[in-house]
Amino acid sequence: MAIIVGVRFKEVGKIYYFDPNGIDLAQHDLVIVETARGTECGEVAFASREIAEDEISAPLKKVLRKANERDRKVLEENKEKEKAAFEVGLKKIKEHKLDMKLVSVEYTFDRSKILFYFTAEGRVDFRELVKDLAAVFRTRIELRQIGVRDESKIVGGLGVCGRPFCCKTFLGDFQPVSVKMAKEQSLSLSPTKISGTCGRLMCCLKYEQEAYEHLLRVTPKNGAVVETPEGRGTVVDFNLLTGILKVRLDKRPDAAPLVISRKQVQLVRDRSIQIDKKELDALKDME
Image 1 (cartoon, rainbow, N blue to C red):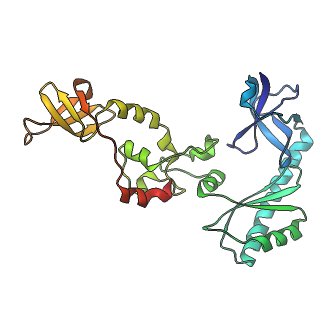
Image 2 (cartoon, helix red, strand yellow; image 1 turned 60 degrees about the vertical axis):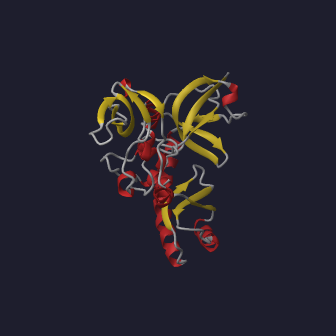
Image 3 (cartoon, one colour; image 1 turned 30 degrees about the horizontal axis):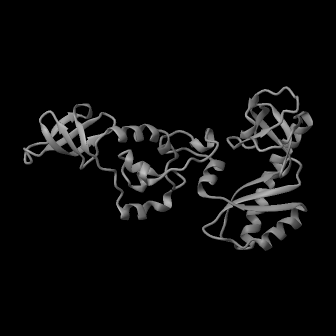
């Protein structure tokens, strides 16, 4: 077993493991650590705990120290510098007439590098821009193209539910979501109904998917053949959450469908949820 501490460098970012180095740390403490990007200041996401050796990538980098007043002052200064650098970045992008949108600027703690995060429709030749920015700031410059989901995580905002974005408030990593999930949850496949502010499928489609997958395993779908107390028939409608089926009986094909609970039928042959290819092609860019 190894003793580790979890540290994140963004408000709701990925958690990285570090060796606490014998330092007594509590959640929300600020710590100074050595990373691949250089010396950084992060926040303790969870205090020291034991973890299996095979769950870490050895060797772990060590926590250098708890952040002191001087470190906190550097953080505040960096934030002010980031605001100024953002304005400079906007100006330079405009001067170079580049088709890109600047989203955020980030200084590394030791100011050895400035990262400019941007979005763009395609590839952007920003070599001259980097040279120009390096001449202004006289330090290493890195431009990173990010996706619209990452932009939403950085900028924040309100979702269609009226609450702040999940990615901004508690989602450390983006979970894969698909059109298939929306179909299985009986949601309208209208882009306006299943997409978030970022224009991609809503992250919350993932939250209840496990429950829907269980219900799909135990509920006959449209077209399934079942045995009912009144005879064999075909399912013409179903409600996953209530478990209520509408079954058209073979012996009474012109009569109104029999309304019955899934617990009262015996499955003979099931069907699967199908997604129309045209629907899938129209929505594939939202995944």
